[in-house]
Length: 107
Image (cartoon, rainbow, N blue to C red; front, side, top):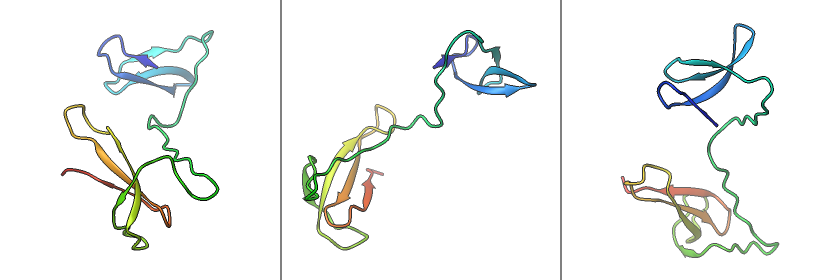
């Protein structure tokens, strides 16, 4: 990850006028070091993997929750911080029957 020396914003690699440059959201540019190695990814969001056994059991706890997709009344659940640290966590549910996934916020 590369940060702008001018404003501190995260920089992205872009092709500018035929050359690779680091560009921040404020428009500051810096040439990329051709000798360095970089790993570029498409997104910054974490992938969510829920492991299940062949019987469909998950290591996540279950709770009473109505699935909006199939009407089942039991779901796996977990909490994840996806907003600012001073905001409450978001509750995620996964139906034990159809594996439909939904979330519940405190808004």
